Amino acid sequence: MIWNKNKECMPREQMRELQGKRLHKLVAYVYHNVPFYRNKMQEMDLLPDDIQTIDDIVKLPFTTKQDLRDNYPYGLMAAPSSEVVRVHASSGTTGNPTIVGYTRRDLAIWAEVMTRSLTAFGVTREDTFSVSYGYGLFTGGLGAHYGVENLGATVIPASTGNTEKHLRLIRDLHITGMACTPSYALYMAEKMEQMGIKKEELGLRIGAFGAEPWTENMRKEIEESLGLKGYNIYGLSEITGPGVSFECQEQHGSHINEDHFYPEVIDPETLQPLPFGQTGELVFTTLTKEGMPLLRYRTKDLTYLMEGTCKCGRTLVRMAPIMGRCDDMLIVRGINIFPTQVESVILEFKQLEPQYMLVVDRKNNLDTLEVQVEVRRDFFTDDIGAMLALKKDIANRLKSVLSIGVDVKLVEPNSIVRSQGKSKHVIDKRKLV
Ligand code: ADP
Ligand code: ZN
Image 1 (cartoon, rainbow, N blue to C red):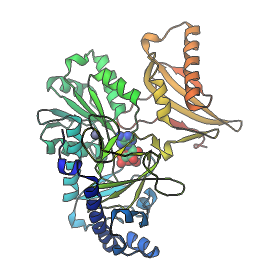
Image 2: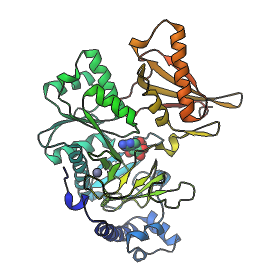
Image 3: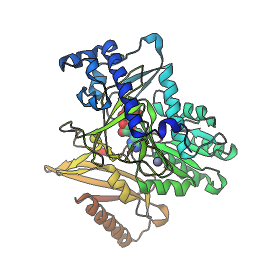
Image 4: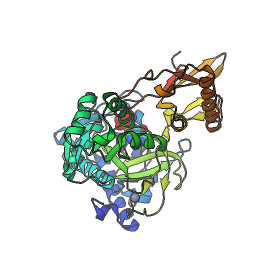
């Protein structure tokens, strides 16, 4: 189902025209209201009227997370404080949190794009949907919450924590869908097993999972253990929050709500735009935001854009699943490694729990990478030979995927810290010294 056919299936030409009009208006707005952008444009000899069509976007300056930090807290706000009705902050995964502000209209647009996403997942007014992203400064909780309400389904604001209570509510209130991080979904599945609740006792159908990178193998694992279908939802606080892009029933990339958030993919070194299909850094311009609009914001997320109308009928451009952030990329002995590559391998082994931790260190001037994995209780044996053979299999498989030798460490079930929000998969001891 499609919530807003007019926008989601708009012919390309018309969409580009709309984006151009919105960009033109936006540039004049930030020029007159945000000294940071006015100064940048003046330095570049740019006037608002130099930006007429969406193709002119390449003339505009980029914005980085550092710019947000330098202008902390309200320096990039374009609307007067009397118009700002809510403030959120990023989770601070990679440093100090940054602050974002919303006008009433910004919140309405956020609810709209969330509703489009949930509708694409198959959520209807008949559904009861629990939100287990954290409520608070993090955008996940309230963002998903207002989307569910806007759609007309029933929202259960479960938030994180209280997992046992939440699982009982899922059963007792006939909750049919839930939104949380993929890590928390796994944690819930684990708790369910401990409590002796069978997935068949629950009526879960749909999961809206995001806020961190996850792989196809992880999707299978979660779907299997919770008995639902998992959909990817992407967003970031700087741009609005969850709902920037979403998967449709085809699950072949995520549609970007590009009438509001204009995407580009650039080469992070040269800053030049890349064509469809080429992986680089995702950049967004908020075409309609009033509170804290951003021009060409560099997300640090790595992906590529996909061309063409989707089988679902939507013309909204699609992005591939995020491989990771530029900052997540580990360079070990000169080789680039993403935690998602390791995740994909770990989940191929039915003997392992879907949990892992990468520990990077430097010994005698040589980088080392240890991959800690948990053996499932039913596969754990005293037979040292069998455990060594398993360890060797995992190491071989990792080597063929990562092109680098790693130390595999089998650890006891439940020894890797579980996450209820965004999980941490890397300990880089090289940075600690
Ligand atoms: P922080 O940068 O502090 O984590 P946010 O809480 O705003 O800030 O989180 C946004 C980031 O979360 C994105 O830039 C991206 O790295 C990650 N993210 C969000 N949704 C997804 C998703 N579906 N897949 C992969 N990564 C995601
Ligand atoms: Zn589609």
